[in-house]
Length: 279
Length: 257
Image (tube, rainbow over all chains, first blue to last red; front, side, top):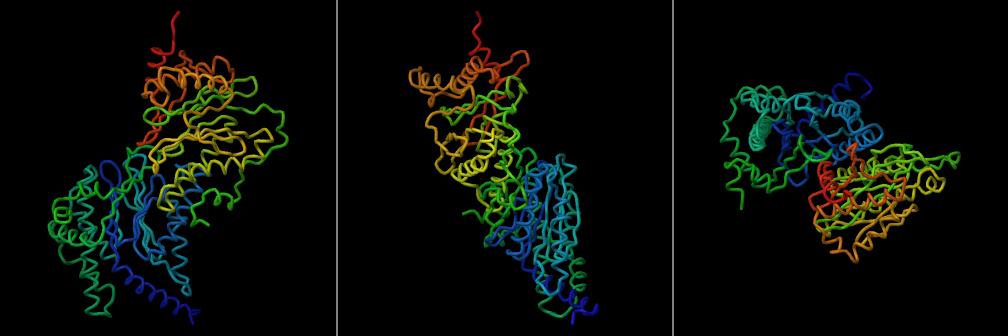
């Protein structure tokens, strides 16, 4: 029955609705450039969501772990074969995104007889110079975008919009220290996480309302203050684990990726988050 | 297949070939590269190599780097055909990275040793044809056992663990005897030497090799050319800067008459 164009459009529309619901329970991913490189952060429930792809490229994901693994492996394969056959400096985030991820994800999304990837991916690439740091994010339908300075993944575009509004309300952070960057990233994460919880409960109340409805609601309500955000982080971190990786511009050797150890991360957390959690 | 994190297998599936013999090359002067040594000292392992590459009687290059970092904790020093050796190092470097990134854990030290053996074995046809023989010394820090180790290989890929030191290359017979003598009857065993003294020994040994082997380049002070000396410790691989080598060489190696 999908042979008719109208049916196909309808099926793709259903697919969007189904996928949007899949991400509401996921944890947002935040990446931002600070004075010494790039930081990527999320809160995870057991399975890690942040990974090393290549010497200067990190990946953060939302979605189904099996789908993320599949896409991560295809990126790793592409990056390493390319880095070996050409050179490590030819492995760029833009090429991985445009030729590695986007076509595969888009095709899977539109082939309505097959399962789509339940995945949103964020690639952060450390440039040779700070002004060449790049963030690339891709949605479950294969749509991708590039940004500078920071990027985040959230369940819906309205959640991402709220995170953007929060970042825009903050002072510039390009020269921030690692501890300042961690705090800002935690706040952005909390904005996203709270927005997701709110939209989830509102859709639960009026289950059949359209997506545009919660978008309007999400954008209009005012943003919570820093203390409220950090309290939310503290409550969440008590049950789940905070994950944070860095791409360090002055790191030794060619590999700039480094995951922060829990004790290091503990020392960087703002007191409002760390004090009750440390036991 | 990709799920196992085997990069070499992945390359092969994509049509990559390694270690193919070239029959027509028999009798040709292939560039080779020459004296390398690794020794255990107080804080870990020191690996050093001269910088000359020769083809027959001709000096091809005097700035070759034969002590190559594969990752933060392992180093391969090469003697033999540089073209093959560099390729091996590139394969290893990507294999270790690929394994770590796919499997989310570091390849074990033993696994790294096996990877070197495997490549040498693949290379046997080329080695026997005379175009690709490589005789490396592999040294690294074994984090499970918390000690730095040295391994040396034959061209067929057999691996041998060196207890105190290992040498390879055309200049190696000269310094092998010296190493034995110094280690057994010198003022103190090599394994107890502090960093600076171990470096001085390495400079003296490479100068001796250059004295008796035309294919080993010694120190060229006019050109400010010193051997490559790297240290492997728990914290990772560290290269000794030329300025330090120059100071030690002038103070401890040169004897003005």
